[in-house]
Image (cartoon, rainbow, N blue to C red; front, side, top):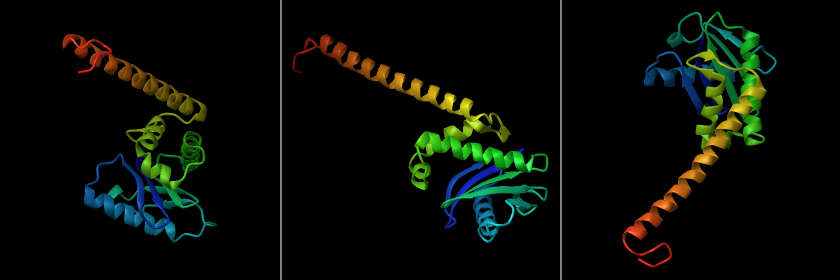
Length: 178
């Protein structure tokens, strides 16, 4: 099971945090600091795995991460998860973000966090991996965008119909002044 997902920049500022195992707010801040301190001090030539290093998540926790440009993508998992599987999952997540934002950067993650969370929710929910097929993930995101666009168009059309009906009710007609 996945216990938490963090995206942290090179300066230790969290850009996305998802905790699937119950941890208090104060403990979350401590977890973010510990993870950052452990990951940032490792040379890129070292492997991307750390074991049993976060007390809030228990002794049998593995930290699996990838460093892309200015961001660390960190997954905390239990012993049952495959290290290579999680590395592949990180790659799928980054590729999906890259396709959604066309060359994703830290600012996209900051200012479009709702969309980043939606992409992540297509891949992982409740600490369980839902989907690893990049094409299925991107199709779900396109479908959501299509539904969102339709609801915005329908909402705007419904709103103008409402204004017209109010005007009619007041005797102003659809083209008259108030």
